[in-house]
Length: 54
Image (tube, rainbow, N blue to C red; front, side):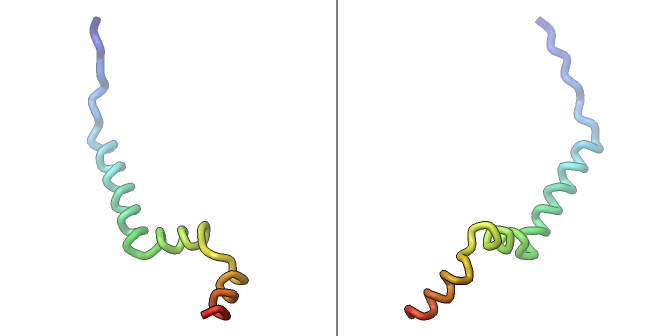
């Protein structure tokens, strides 16, 4: 049995590096935290109720 594997082209590696750099920059700029809060954050009514309790 013979397997022929395609060699990775240099442009594929640089494309992956660019994607990683973009993700690192997104995280460093607080984009991940903001997206997380937007999806999983508490509704404003709950935040107000918590303020009233404390």
